[in-house]
Amino acid sequence: MVGARTMPARAVVLPRRLTERIPVFQRRLLTWYRRHQRKLPWRETRDPYKILVSEVMLQQTQVDRVIPKYREFLTRYPTVRHLAKSKVAELKKVWYPLGYNIRPLRLRNIAKQVVRRHEGRLPGSYDGLIAMDGIGRYTAGAVLSFAFGQDAPILDTNVARLLERFFGTAGRRTRSGPAGKPTGRRERVLWELARQVIPPGDAYTINQGMMDFGATICTARAPKCPTCVLRHACQTYPSLDAGATARASRRRRD
Ligand code: SF4
Image (cartoon, rainbow, N blue to C red; front, side):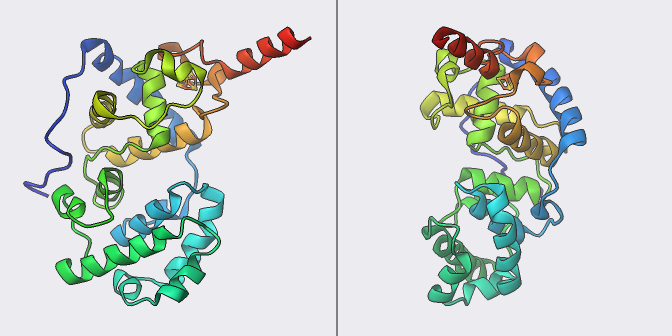
């Protein structure tokens, strides 16, 4: 979309030691994703409403639990207008047992705003999405890249952990376990990295790839470092080799 902003203007300048690692990160991650990507129902659609539903459901909830509920939810509320007209009691029942029950109400509130302000169509610009109550920077990036095919960055906990470890931006903090929610300059560096790792015109693939990689390989507690395709360029390897760490602690106990 001409003139649409795809990220906030305030960014940081990344040092060369980070930017020079971007090509190898992109190449290896995209090769891995082409072979190992998960088949997920929300990857079979570009409908912005369905993408939005999946993104809200996936917050703090595992993929396996979301899949059946995603299908059921869209059968009951197939469009943004159906959701906008929904009754709260029934909506909560359909959402059960996903938990974090503020989420369906937030989704319904977004649906109402979309109907009221945008004639039932989710806007395809960062400014239009972020202006809605209930849509944050991550969700806006996910809708723009997965539904509208725009080069918009995303940064959830999986992506942040992967970027921090690979580029070594968190120093010692990631070595003892999962990275906390990044804030301040650390967060701005990660958003800028998330933006710069996007190959022009292909945010969809790299964003999905980073999410899959963070969820299955570079996990919080048991990263698969010894077989990781990024390990030769990863700034945290081998100090985050969870297998080696576990073996060492077993030896200490023996
Ligand atoms: S080597 Fe380990 S820490 Fe580095 S990206 Fe791979 S899984 Fe993550």
